[in-house]
Length: 378
Image (cartoon, rainbow, N blue to C red; front, side, top):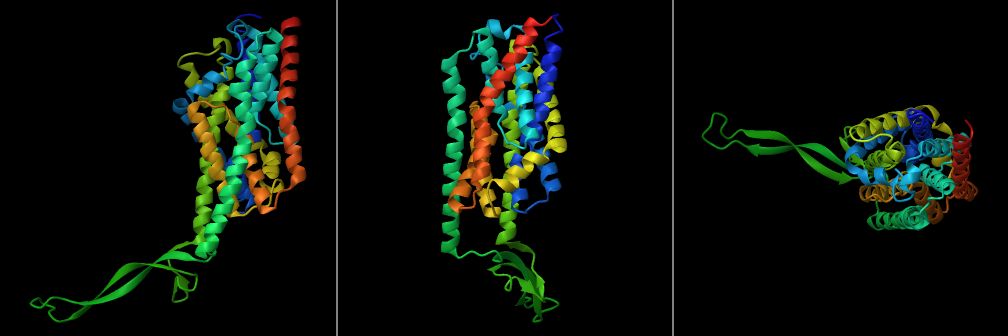
């Protein structure tokens, strides 16, 4: 290949992967909002994509370790990384794997596909460092959904128990009632001795009947509305976390063999974020339906707990450079909710789990074929 030769396929592959990632992953942060009926599909899609883009840009400051991890350094030898065909094969192999899963409506992990592609490239070049593969990549990918399922399931049970003890119901409310307070003006003034009335706001805690005056509801929040608002915030936080976690992994592909270095890295991350947003807006519907409606029955409280658990795990992992999969964590949280609420659709769960098992070897094989073609066909 010429000097420019390896750059163009790597850029094309990274763009395809960013688009595929957006299509497969962008809705995952807001899936519970749509699934529980808090937001419409379109509103959830647009707000989730916007929050994901913001998280992607935040990766400029907060996710440097993930950028390094997915540049292949330490997993594959520097000699292999320097080969022009390597970055192109890895990016295109991962992209095709995720695009195929998206076409089938399967929520798979871009992280898993990238690891599989790096493994495929490493095997082809005989430079794979398998000890680091297990400790740095495979263990976090395997353990994170189990941790998410445990935390989400137990968190939901705790929240349900607290609600039962407190006796909280959907129409309980916290509102502001303007009340007239009588008083008197001190003697000696022009209005001395004349009783005066002032209106002051008073916080009222009660039910729907209490929080009304003249037949109209008072300004404030019912417990259901407060939960919905918290659920929306948790969904946007999860979308932000997903952008923060996934964008540097895709941008890292363009650092393989130092295809892009220095200040260009920042522009690369912004470009990847923008292409991811397009993929999410144009091609998210199939996976969105599976994530929202086909894994488990859910209400706003269950969705809120799943989002909070996923957000905390993904943000923490992104900050310290642990390559967990947002897909695995978010699905794991939903699996946990489905198990404890007995609303899980286990046929769908089994299909998703099967797709996860296949993702890594599929990406490995596709990348190996692409690498062979790139290095043997003139």
